[in-house]
Image (tube, rainbow, N blue to C red; front, side, top):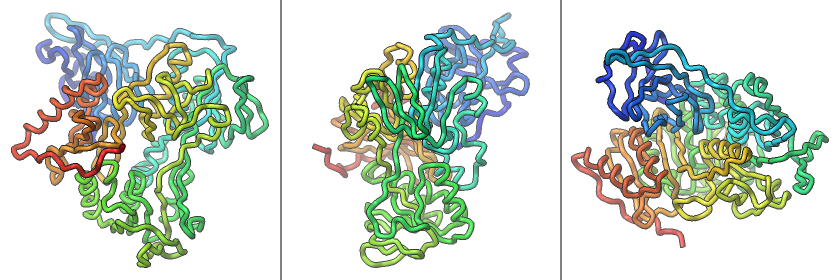
Length: 534
C-alpha cells in the first residue's frame, strides 16, 4: 500500500520561511514526533497531520483543492481548516494545529481544539439502520459527528462488529495484516457515541405506516427515519457439488476465517471466477504458499469490465507469480478432490473458493413497498419511493449525473459515502449524492485505482508502459472520458476525479493528454473491443 509520511523536512515549531510554500501547495515537516503538512490556501497557512486516518497514506502526495486535501490511496477528503474527515473511507479527523507568521517565518503552535458538534434534533428521535457494513457504519458515525441527539440502532446479520470487508480478500487473507486492522471503528467509538448494535439479528418485516421494524429476536423498533443497507449475498452458481463442505465463498469475516483454516492443510486451491474478488483471493492464497488455479469462462480476466489492456496486464502479473489460469472454461462438476471442467479436463485441488459476484439483498425493501429495478431505486437524495426510508450501498440504484442513467455500484467507498449523505439528509440537509464512484484493487503488490463509471465504453486509450507498472487507461462513452484507471499514477487519478466531479470532460481529457506527453512513444488509441450496449 506504500509508505506513510515519515519525520522528514523542517521542524515547524522552530519556524520555516514563508517562501518555502506557495499558494495551493503543501509542505511536509514535523512538530516533535508528529509528521505535519502545511497547506497554503487563499493566503492563509494551515497545519494538519500528514497521514490519512484511514490507512496512514502520506497526504503530502495527495491533491490540495481549495481547503480540501485528498488522500492519494483511497481518496478520503479532509478539511485543512479543521482536520475534519469530510469524505470516506476515512471516518475520523486528522490532527489540526494553530499557525502563526512572525518576521516572515511560519510557526506551528499548539493543537487546535476540535469543537463539539451542535446538538441537532431531540433525544426522542429514532434512526434505525439495517445493515452493519460500510454504508450503515458511515451513516451512524456521520449522524453523531453532525450532532444528532436521538437514538441510533444498527441491526446486523453478521456476528462481528463492523469491519473493513475490503481487507478480507487482500492483506488479511494473505496473512500480511493482523485481525486488529479489520474494525472500521473501535468498539469504544460505538459505546462512546451511544450507537446500539444488535448482532446476529435480522429484520423480518417493515411496516412503513407504523414506522416500525420487526426483528428476528421478537422485538419491534420504531423509527423516524430508516436506512436500508442490506448489502448482498454471494452468488451460488448451479454447479453440481457446489454444496460440498470444501467449497467456500468469501463475503464475511467468518467466511474468511474458514478459507484461512482450509489453507492449514491444503496445498492446492481452485478459484472459480476471475473477477476482482476471485483474483484478489488467488493472489492472497498464492502468498500463503498455496498452488492456485483460476477458472473462468472469459478469455481474459476482467475483460468485460476493464478491457484487454488491463486484463492482459493482470493475467501476466498473476502468471509471473505462478498462478495457473483455465480461461474460456466453465465448471461442470465439483468433486471432493478435483474440479471437472466443461471440456472434461480436471483440476486437482484440496478445496474450492467460488467468486461469482453478489446478488443484492432487496427482499426487505421490496416487502416495505420500495420500488425495485435491478436494485432499490432511490432519488438523488438516496431516499426510496417510500418516504422516510433511505437505501445505500450495494442495493442502491441512483441517478448518476454523468452517465445520465440509473446505476448501481458495488464499491466500498461508494457505500460509505452514500451512508454519509443519508446521514446529512436524515438531518434535513437535502444533500444530493453526486460523487464520482471510486474503487481500488490490490493484485499482489500492485494497486489499480479506478475512477468513474462505464458499463458500455466504446473506446479505450492506453497511455504509459504496463511493463513498467506505470500506465493509465481512459474509457470513453461517446467521445467523453467516463472512467479512468491507473497504476502508479495516484495524482493523475485524483485530478481526473476532480474533473469528473465537476462534469468537466475537457479538463479530464487535458489531464490524460498531459500524461501522454510524458512518454516518448504513446500507445495508439485502442480498437473497439466491445460494441456499446443498445
